[in-house]
Image (cartoon, rainbow, N blue to C red):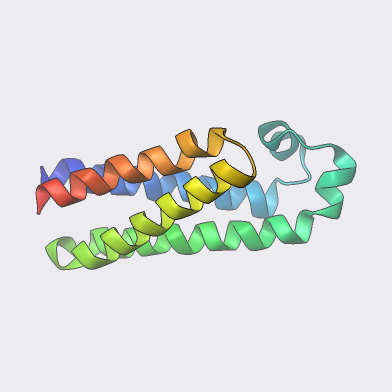
Length: 119
């Protein structure tokens, strides 16, 4: 079960690494605009905000990988950062786009359940 939970946490971290790339580097590019459904004008106007958001996603990914690298001692880090992922996903789903619940909050909740079950 430890391996399964570690894989789940790494997958959530990789997902947030992908968000970092999309938001920091692809926001105004065709890929970023397509993924987020943005007009070129809105993407250009919100580029700095998106980069900031991407940086935060990078911090979530780093924290999750820190927890995995620490093994059993990384339980508090995994719980904290997965909790942050879930809260961000719930907030984003409630305020921006309901799809964020499925893309961010649900994977975080599944990984958290696996981490807790592996303890």
